[in-house]
Image (cartoon, rainbow, N blue to C red; front, top):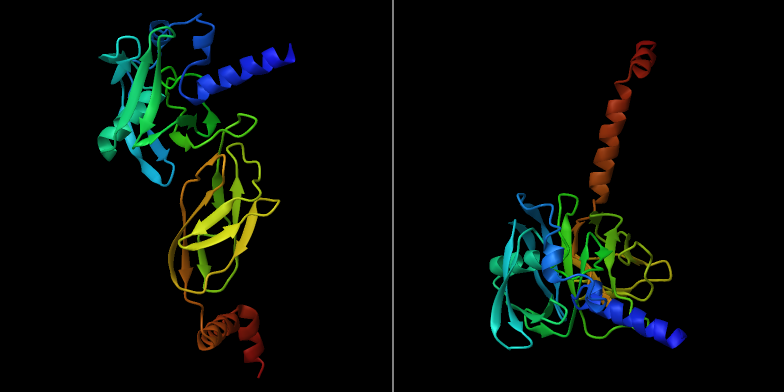
Length: 279
């Protein structure tokens, strides 16, 4: 009995992860019935789309659209078909991003489940999962209706699934975005629900660091410049990029001049002016 329940859970999670609605396995809803529940037919959705491939970020940018025409191969007839999605959807966001970014993607259609399934994005094939504002997608990408409450869609490529079939997306935070040369700053790595992630590799240009048990890495850089920071870990989708500006440290003369300037300002306070008047 336990094995049967586990198999059902894995089957449903797998359906969600590859873009098939979990309802496809119960066959209680069809693609057309789900589309009928659109509530955002007249409105345009504007938001960020980020697509993290196997080895790099395929595309990141803002899209605006209200409906989509998706071309897919019918897996029964192997003919190409066009499917209309009448409201803004996660799959539609991918379609709009591909037009702007100039990358390709492929979709197949399973008549048995009446479902669309993303197989390839930017040449990367196998398992694609999406998150909306870092919330794991539990329905097919064509069935997730985007509204004004949604601001970002993340598509992430997974080479393999972890043993528990849970998929995660990395997030990073910097405690400073501007720092002096050789001064320490902290990069923190989290999963999609802001749990600290240990053992994640943090890339800052060509330099690499590793997050500790609290998800942190303390870093200092000895060359002035602008650096991009991001994180990766097996079984996780790559994080977004955060930039840090490393500035030249102040010289001793500059520090002395600033201290002297502050001292002069201090002498202008009324209490010091009275003291000076006594002599």
